[in-house]
Image (cartoon, rainbow, N blue to C red; front, side):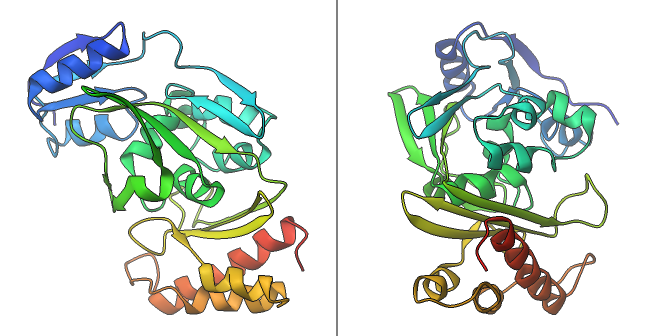
Length: 269
């Protein structure tokens, strides 16, 4: 199947993107890596009137460390995240994204804006307390990751807004574990452990419509509980749904195991 007809705009600035999206009145889409958008265009599950190509906008493809965080431009490819050394947790997560072709084209902002419950970067964003810089008609604003994700594939972004960058705090200790049927498949369960500013955070992906903090499990550790007790607590506080990939009890069991592995990687026993 072929895409429905659309107007194509190759934007040269963030301001042009915002202006074009606002003029499209909700009928515009941003094209960056295209790894999520192009397939749904081909199936005509999305029929935007205007496609805004942002790949030629300068200044959005850099990674740099600022203090205790790493700033990631909107157009940074997953392969760049996997290769960088300033934020090892981000690198570990990026290496689990799809396959080489997908990592070569897919972008950090695209993954976060798509808000797939099984995607790796949204879990890391919530797990580290990341913030997102967003440009819109009223200027720029900063959104906390846990306020960005509303539901599966739904964010708090407005139709005329664009993510321009992401800020990931650097954890002092971290762990990442993921279960998928095959390497490169969407994760059935992802666990991220990150110690940020002295606070230990446990976050799960693939078990709810949005990345979920396992706050009860965090309290178990804060009260002196073991990693196994915390992993069991994390599994107990989720309500995963069954699908063709696995039953609810299976996902709960995998959540406990992934949390245990992530905690072990963070040397929390």
